Image (cartoon, rainbow over all chains, first blue to last red; front, side, top):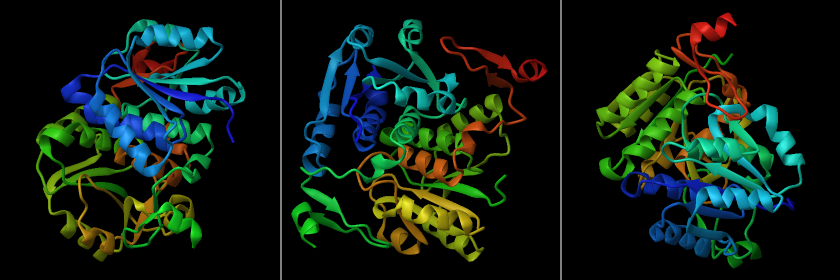
Length: 185
Length: 185
């Protein structure tokens, strides 16, 4: 459906404080249609293991996962290879003013989300600094809404053929099926 | 623009582990157009203080904040007063199948987001169990996308007249103005 590659780059995190937020960023990247998630500048295998486990159970085992890379170098190389770098920040240009242009570019997209203070150079290297609204909120919320607009809501219907488990939508309960079972009904 | 009241109810949290996620849920509620945020079943004034600080600096000082209420009782009372309860869960009915109906109901909306395991009774009490996609991700992402669809993206342009600080959108930098200054330009 979408031929370009979309990776999410999380810039660092403070291990005690940010671990769960980083996990949420990674899960959101996977669920909202990105093809990979990279945790830059720190190594935290526990986060990657959580994400691998989600991919094993719910599918998308080819989701690219990496940690410990140099964030700034990664952005530079992504751009050198012809991709665009999109940094989500409340200080940037409004999502509604740039998302169509980004989607039309037909280039691989690196979506950058910060943790604590983002170095100035990231603002300069980014092809787009994009604000999902100009209010303080959450990198998880910003990433979800950015990807939802980029993929025009279709990502919420993606089916991963290699999933072990699938949800059977239910008005009141919790119904989970082995994926084969669901497909056969 | 939207005459019904929308509150977000966070069901409990494990203080060490979930504090920052709960703060992100509260900030997302505020930024994406909700009128209030309630942390149920635990009291954590540090979280509320973070949210109050955001309201002081960025506006919306009438944002309702509360913690320590009984979650199940709160849901029951909300419904008794004529409001609808919407529980966000990956096991529910797909967002796209129910969000228009919820928006058209003209009733006050309580959006419920869980922390760890959500008690069965919440699924039963909720008028709608809504899945923002049927993949595991994040309550922060789910809340943001639910509110974004409910308010049809208009919430990302809300201006809070009582804000001290405003962002001046910028392609590369970080520009913040005292709100009066920005309005006078």
